[in-house]
Length: 219
Image 1 (cartoon, rainbow, N blue to C red):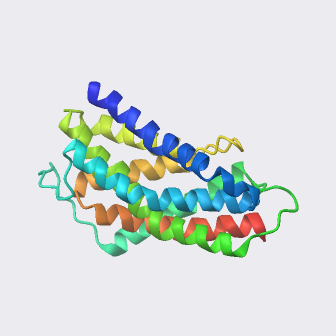
Image 2 (image 1 turned 90 degrees about the vertical axis):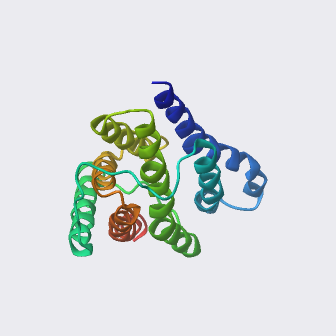
Image 3 (image 1 turned 180 degrees about the vertical axis):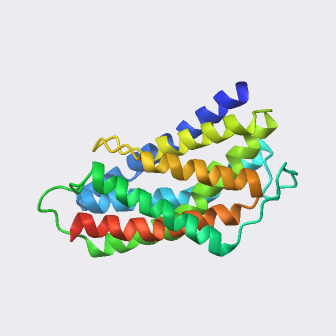
């Protein structure tokens, strides 16, 4: 249980504490940049800063990038199967947002900052699937396995933390579709032990969901 509590503490520091300190460090820029550009800058800074932080996290906890663990099922998934999984998850996400949140979560009359939108989209589509999968699957799952946590509990814990990381507390948006995405990705990793499969599914999901979300907000 100590490792589980330590994991939750690391999650809070990593996912909530780090963006806060980045915001404090960059607060002086708010004198020259509007709130929209500041949000994009903060998100991009957090995305890139995760790379060295993840490296440090792997080193201090003893979790390796190369996974030699033998699993009870060596399931093989083709890229085509995983592509289909990503598309289905994206369709569910879009349908969920359209049904429960039909009104765009932006200020009325806000001007779309095209440069910021492009940068945010690139970070969300290309970088986020890599950094998030390295944290929530490649690091978190072996960390819990070393503590003797059963696979079913690992699936629940990682899915819930992944969901919590994507809640928009400002606008009151609860991304329950991310709960399903996190569960599927954790299941794939536990079964296959190949983080590339998780990154691929996550990438396909974001490649569909992010452009549609941006279009709904600003178009």
